[in-house]
Amino acid sequence: MPSQSTPDPTGPDTPDGAPAPTASSAPAGTDTRHEAPAGAEAEAPGGAPDGSPDGAPGHRGSSPAVEHARLLTDVVTRLRRALRSSIRTDYPWESLPMAQIELLQTLAAAPLRVGELAARQRLAPNTVSGLVSKLLDAGFVDRQPDPGDRRTARIALTDDGHRQLADWQHAHERRIADALGSLTSADRDAVMAALPGLESLARALAGPAPDERPARPTAGDR
Image 1 (tube, helix red, strand yellow):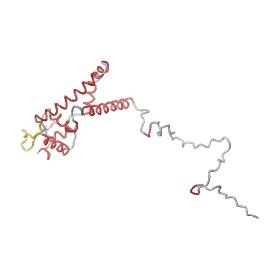
Image 2 (cartoon, rainbow, N blue to C red; image 1 turned 60 degrees about the horizontal axis):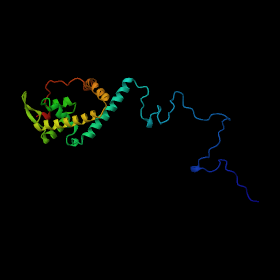
Image 3 (tube, rainbow, N blue to C red; image 1 turned 60 degrees about the vertical axis):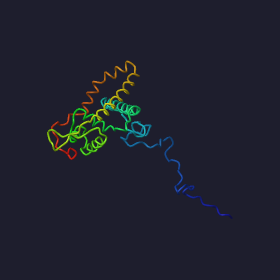
Image 4 (cartoon, rainbow, N blue to C red; image 1 turned 90 degrees about the horizontal axis):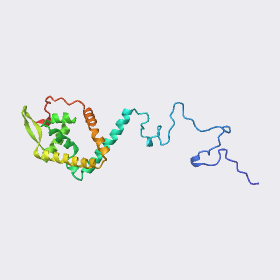
C-alpha cells in the first residue's frame, strides 16, 4: 500500500525558508492596521510629516517675517542669477570674477592697505593678498607708498582699473535699463518705489562700518 506523505506542519515552502503568511487570528471586523504611537505625527502624502516633497522642510507655521525673508531671498537670488547670465553677452564675466570686482569697487573710493581691504570685505588678509596679486598682474591696481607709514604700501586703482570697473558698471546699467523698459509702467514704478527700503536693508545687512583706525600692517602690506 503506497505510503501517504505527511503534511508539513510549517506550511508550503517560501523563499529563504520563511513561513508562508497566515490569516490573522483577530476577530472578524477588527481593524488590524498598525496605529501610530501616541504623540507621533502621521506622515502626510509626499514623504514628510508636513507634506513637503522629498522630506524638505516646509514653511507651515512660519512667522510673517520668516515668510517675507524667504520670498525676498528667492527673488534676490533669481535676480542675481539672471543678471549674471545675461551680462555675459556684453561683458565676459570670467575675465574679472566678482571677488575682484568687489575689491575694485572698494578701492574706487580711496587707496587702502591690504589689512584695511580685508576688514572692509570681511575676508582673511591672505585671501585679499591673493586677489590683489591677480589685480596687480592684470594692471588694474598698483602699490603706492603710504604717506603715514613708509614701511607699508597702499593698494590703488590704475587708469586701466578705473576703465575696467566703469565698463562692468555700464554693462550692468544697460542690461537693467533694457529689462526695466520691458516692464509695465505700474511694475516699473513699484520697483523704483522699493529702492529706499532695499537701500536700508542693504545697510542693515552690512552692519556697522569696520573700525577706520589704521590697521596693524600685515604681510601683504609690506
